[in-house]
Length: 353
Length: 217
Image 1 (cartoon, rainbow over the protein chains, first blue to last red):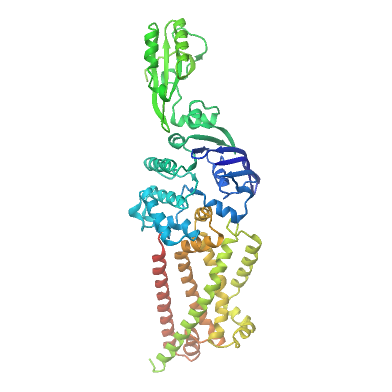
Image 2 (image 1 turned 45 degrees about the horizontal axis):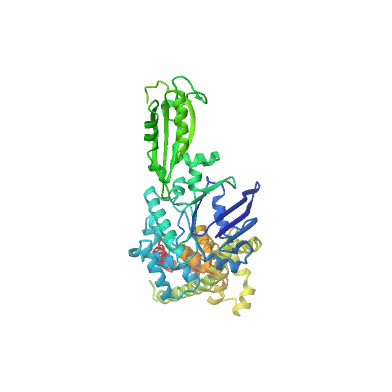
């Protein structure tokens, strides 16, 4: 649906040219929710604006729905943009127009007859749950309601793509959740392709199918959200994920020496990740039954969801005869889960835990 | 109060209102597009053209730097060309309009600058043409502010119209100078001042009310 190849964007600044994007390649499939995450200044806002040419890339090609946006004249571009809805962090509603008129705005731009506008705006008001606010002004609405108007307005011209530029960054967590649910809802109902720009991993985890991590104007890493979450490669990705998923050892083990070889009195610490169906399997119970000689201590555990896939994480410590520990490890490796050996660590005597 | 005062004052008030209203209408018709031009051709805006912006900006600044009383006499040949005479109320309106146009241009530019660029960007993302952005985004969104700014221009026109007496333009200022000052009739001077105060208060009140009603922010 959207194909970006070798996108570069250079800005002129008083201190010389600044490269905001340094060769971005991305493919976004029809109907998916694609997340682009990065810190502020990473270039993600510039990147999303390159998709609808609000920013013209210095080099590279942007193809949306089979059309080369970079080769278009201003006139063709205006027409193509009606296929690409966009919502913004600060909503960007007309303060001088009512909710109804804001949603009608893109239709009036293309000279749609008023009767037809009404037929389109009323169902949109229903869809975003603002049917009773049609004649209010944006200043009378809450942030979440303003973003709902923004979404309805973006959908008015029946686009195939929805670009979300930090659409929930100005909202509180509950409102964020309801807006994300709405975005997911319209993605399913209208089989809309959605591109989400954010600095919050939570947004990616809640609604995205795929994610690209952008850092200093390049894609650091990309893949399905599940892949990236369970097997992050780059430090930046690990940083983003660590905000949501604690990767730290329990306090009693922190700061101690981590040995690759067995130490007397040490625990072998393992980090286990269960994805999807396997999250329900009684793997640990099975291991304990099979190897009664070992002792398993659960040090950390949590069960979460990535979009709709269950996702469990656990840190366990195993003690016992070394041979049995190795057998148990073998056993785990045969199971449908991902295990990562942290190492042998002694529990330090800290009463503060 | 002498008997001739009332007709004198009524006539002068009528002349002032006529000069201000007509000059204001003409100056607005030219000044608002000038303001739009100044704003939209500036850096990063929808019709960015720095050359146009600098040239127009320089002309605006040049006209605004001429004191009104000098402008009034300096353009007499132009006035004569335009309205056939350099004296009288209609002739006085030419310098009034010329002084008001760049003033309105700058005021409107200031108002348009207050419209967040995000709104322009949103309209662009929906495929709006520059003309649509001007008519459907910039002007409606800044209407309240433009009205407030135009109110200021009207009030300064009331003041400037008083100087139009210098070219026989009539009006309250002219009356105050000729009767109040030159013929030693302080009561006429006082009366014109009171009328001007009331007039300005009224303009400001109407302007504020209208601006407030238009402001939905």
